[in-house]
Structure formats: structure tokens, C-alpha cells
Image (tube, rainbow, N blue to C red; front, side):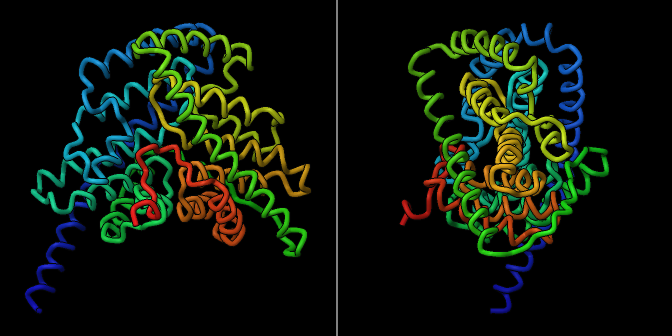
Amino acid sequence: MFKEKLKNLRQLFILGICAVVIGTVVGALDAGFGEILIFLTGVREHFFFPLILFLPAAGVVIAKSYFRVGGKCVKGMGLIFEVGHGEEDVIPLRLIPLTVIGTWMTHLFGGSAGREGVAVQIGATFSHWVGRKMNMVSDSKIFLVTGMAAGFSGLFQTPVAACFFALEVLIAGSLQYTALFPAIIAAFVANVVSRGLGLEKFHYDLQTQIQMNPVFIIKMIMLGIIFGLVGAMFAHGLKLVKDRLNKIFESPVRKIIIVGTILVILFILSGMGRYSGLGTNLISASFHGNKIYQWDWILKFVLTIITLAAGYQGGEVTPLFAIGSSLGAALAVLVGLPVEFAAALGYTAVFGSATNTLLAPVFIGAEVFGYSYVPYFFMVCCVAYVFNDNKSIYAAQKNLQDML
């Protein structure tokens, strides 16, 4: 019995040390990736019109790069999930430069995409590589979850939310508690490192005074239903458009040229780059009193789906934050709630619905807007989770009910 406990403690110690190393490296990589992405975003905003014309050409470079040297990497986040489910054994290290450079190009030339996919892939790839080098193949999933937590935390600097995101996203309805100890260490270390290296974090202090009554609860339930349905529609729409485009175009290069050309026209006509990039302009407008149109969330919704379905690189989470916050701001007047409060609810709940996660969006809200609002984030995110119909932007995500 004593030897068994000693063995477990030794294993925890090794995992803890590995988690510190993973958090440090991934946090630094996230910071470098994020800082350059911010710089490229600034360049695009100043030179939108000439750069947007090269979006199809950038797509060709991305598609050919994945075709020639990508191999399994073409699956992107799908490969991460397949390794997590034991369906694949190896994540090639070349996934990191492919997804990083591809995402930089997508953003520089005006595509609408996120960045968390890159961060999670960076973390998962490096952490999985460390696990293999340590010859700890039996703990493969633990290292994978640890890396995902580090990647998410290093980019968004929300370590608690990052930890829960990594624990619950692989299998909806199940938490990978075996990875809790190294995941939380890696998440906090990555957060400290990326912040120390100067990566910006979005934070907004809500100052809304809440009066809890039956009418307020009804409003919260209504918002939760709407946010849940919108998140589910995004996840379903992304899968549907990807499938349709893959059926229409046998060649990924031909697909990205034609769809990229259509995107150029759409981005120009819909506001000269208002819906390009991450969508942080919409998030900022939602919380700082700038103009938000009733259709902002719809156009960001549609253009993000088309960009990602065409084959451009990036992620979905930050655009989901933009969609949710602009939708919340648009609904605020209709339901009689403060704009900032409704935008914060949408920011968290649409993300939770689209990723089919519950605890991660609640803690995203807490770490971005303040822990005093956790009960309200919890209420809306729970309703959104119930109404998302088990849809997820991660096609390879499994559901616990289906596995029983």
C-alpha cells in the first residue's frame, strides 16, 4: 500500500514538473503568436482595401501548404480530438507552424476567424510531444488536456476557464479529472508567462446593479434560449457549409480560390472590413457605447462560417465572443436590460452553446467581467447549454450519453 502511494506521488510530481515546462513554453509561444497577430491586425485595418484583394491568393498558399506537407495536420482540431479519443497516436510537430502561419495569413488578408484553435493546437501538440519524449504513453490524454489548458490560458489569460474548457471539451458531459492537477498548473503558468511577455487581455469591469425578481428571471431564461439556439445554429451551420463546399469542390485549392473571391466581395460590401478578423471591434463597441447595428451579429456569424468552411485557418471562439456580445447588445433594448450586462451574457453563453461546454463559459464570464456575476452567467449558460441540442463546432467531440 505504501509503495503504491509513493508511486502515485512520484507520478504526480513528474506530471507537475512537466506541467510547469509545458505552461512556460506554451505561454511563450502564445504570447509570440498573439503579439504578431495583433500587429498584423493593425496592418490590415490601415491597408484593408489592397490587402483584401489578396485573400484568395493567401488561401491558395494555405491550402497547398497543408496538401504538400500537412498530412494528418489537415484535420486541425479534429486531429487533437482523435488523439484524445485514442483514434490516433501522434500529433506531428509541423502542425504548429502550419496553423500559426495559416492563421496569420487569414487575418492579414481580411478573413473572419478566431485564434483559440491555434493556441489549443500549439498546447496540445507540444504537450503530447513532451509526453512521448517522457515515455509516458499511458498518460497520453493527461498530457493532451494539460496542453490544451495551457494553450487556451496563455492566449486568453483566463486560467480557470481554460482548465475547465480542456477538461470538458473532449467528451461533452464528462470531465477528465485525471488531468486536473497538471492542467491547472500548466494553465496558471501559461497565464503568468504570456502576461509577463506583454500579451494583452480583454477585461471589462461590469458595474450593473441587479434586482432579482420574477420578471428578471424570465428575461434571463429568454436570453439563455436565444443564445443557446444561436450557438447551436453556428455549430450546425459551420458543419453544413463545410460539407456542402467539400461536395461541390473536389480540389481544396479550387474551393478556396472561388469562395475566397466571393468573400472579398462580401467583406467590401458589408463595411470595408468591419467583419474581418477576430471581431474585437464588435466586442469593444458592445461594451464601450460605440455603434452596434442589429445585423452585426448576423453578418459576423455568416462571414466567419464561410471563411472557415472555405479552408482558411484560425478558430471560432473569439468570433463567437463577438457574435454573442453584439447579439446581447442588440437584444438589450428589447428585453429592458443594460447593454453591457446583456452583452456579457451573450459573450459567455453563445461560446458555451457552440462548444457544447458549461463550466468553461461560466468561468470565462467570471474572469473577464467579475466573479460577483457568476450566478447570472451560470443561469444563462445553463439554459443555453440545454437548448443547444448537443451541437458543437468541434465535429470530433463525443457525447457521454452516446458512449454509454
